[in-house]
Length: 170
Image 1 (cartoon, rainbow, N blue to C red):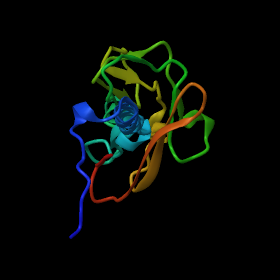
Image 2 (cartoon, one colour):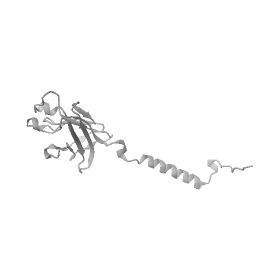
Image 3 (tube, one colour):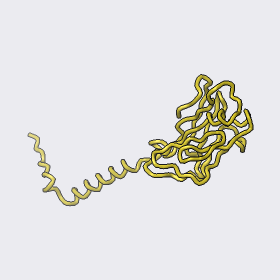
Image 4 (cartoon, rainbow, N blue to C red):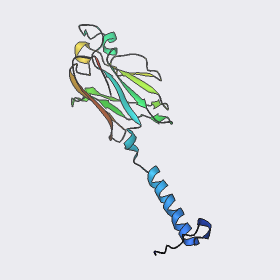
């Protein structure tokens, strides 16, 4: 006959065992909460690029330039200062870089950055480009947008490779 030792109920277990179990439970819960933030995606991200403004042909008018835009969303519950952040396309041209001035993107809010000229608001900013067809930023068939913080660290990017649509949801 095999004899089994009786396992004492929790109230009878030594204090040391209960302390170890409690410490293990805390360690597991801290590890679960301490997952990297990037696992859920960037806090501020590119959500859409409208790379082919409506109408044909693209005539370089301010209306046409403003039909081309990129949208950036703050996915957090806190406002984020975008001062010094940049948006650029895949070219290495210095005139294809937009640098945010003093601008705060509210919690859960989206800002639209339009290529042409206009009056900046809390929801729409303007790149300020003009000068006809050479003023467009986003190529109509293939390009990539990069969003970098004020330190130059890549926060998000979005690429497209299609002429079948006018925009890309990122």
